[in-house]
Amino acid sequence: MNKKISILVPLWNEADSLHALHQQISEVMTGLSQPWEIIYIDDGSTDESWKMIQEFSAAGSHIGGIRQRKNFGKAAALQAGYDHCRGDIIMTLDADLQDDPAEIPQFLKKMSEGFELVSGWKKIRHDPWHKVFPSRVFNGMVSWLTGVALHDHNCGMKAYSSAICQEIRLYGELHRFIPVLAADRGFRVGEVIIQHRPRQFGSSKYGFRRFLRGYFDLLGVTFQTRYAQRPMHYFGSWGLIFLLMVTFFVLISWIWPTSRFAFWGIVASLFATVGTLVYQNGLLSNQLAAMNPKKPYVIAEKIGFLTSFNSHSPTSSLN
Image 1 (cartoon, rainbow, N blue to C red):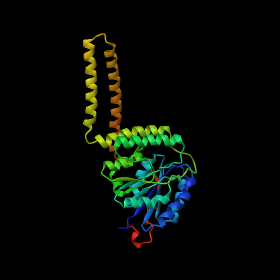
Image 2: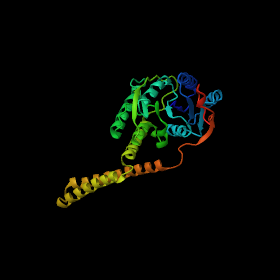
Image 3: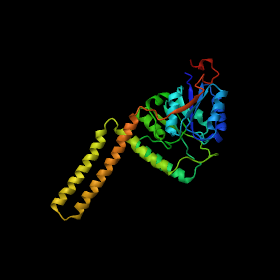
Image 4: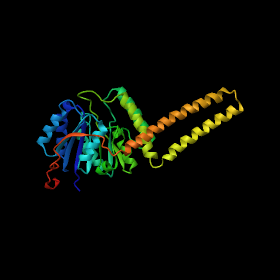
């Protein structure tokens, strides 16, 4: 079967790199025998990005664009792409030219081996150490806590079956955990080593704040994938632990009324209990957000949706 490929490119203020990226993607895809489309998702850019996407779309019926009303974030941009793409295989990559479109055939080859999601691994990175080191720590934590052993969970370059787009819902910053969410639904996940190119334009949009938000999202995803169907296993365990701790220190205070150990133990247990309750409320709120049927994005404008996939085959056009 000649599977159709949808290429999703979320972007925010990437006008400097768009022409080169579009040309590179088109050159690679033209060399393949499969029908394809490109969807650019402009996540509230304030530069000339949308104007350039309009030009691309006007030049080809297989090029679509989505402009969001404001910057909703990468996860929301990808979800908008999921909701509008029509391919059997979804390919995502960032718009800053650090992901090389020449790697696309390698992803498709890996998927032909039976993998349903293939994530890129930037084994050699051309980023400053203060970006690389936190990224490696974060990826190690994700692999350890979730059991999905990948070297680069947050790599923007991925390929996956369209069935995954129907099974997962992205919001917040959950784009970091697409492999984890897919594996939780039973999809086979793999990775390929890819070339990482130095940034040519602009500056990285990632920093300590995003690392911290990513850590909190990791806690939420870990809970969602492990305990969403059996929450009492999690909350009951914590409740039992603190009940036993407080009971232990109360007994000590009865046996040795003047014991400082008992007094400060009770205080510490109470503070730990309050902190854990706040944390657990956060997890519950996260679950409510996951069940919210409201879309995480608002579209201001769409163009080019879509006459046909680009292919030399006359059967590629969709009715």
